[in-house]
Length: 137
Image 1 (cartoon, rainbow, N blue to C red):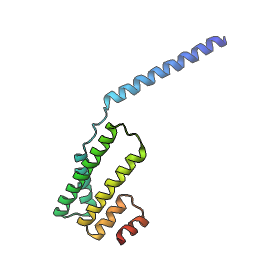
Image 2: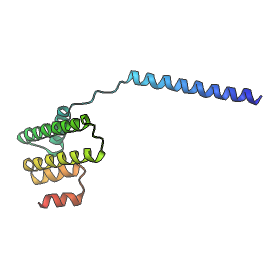
Image 3: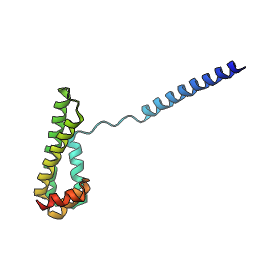
Image 4: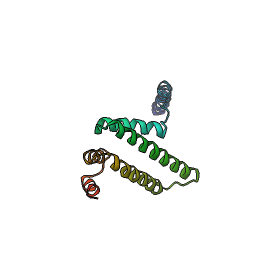
């Protein structure tokens, strides 16, 4: 009698697992992964978001978009080179990210007024202490 109970329990678990696999597979088939955006697309979207958030003028939008396009593509190319060379160190990728982030901030600081730049830093997740230090330069 216990053997029969164990067999039914095992069968139920296998059946449940099979149903779960079928449902999961069908969900992915109905909702395929979105294609990854290019660095240019991400930069354009970010520039428009900054235009809304920082109330950029047309000339500022032009410069912000140009800066983001250049830097996002440059960062992406550097990541691709690292990946192609087999570099797997997370610290190396973080260093490259930090370098391009600093380049972007330095360039944007020249285009934005002080209030816009402070708001940009805040939106970017830079701490109040870091913002104050950065703005004192």
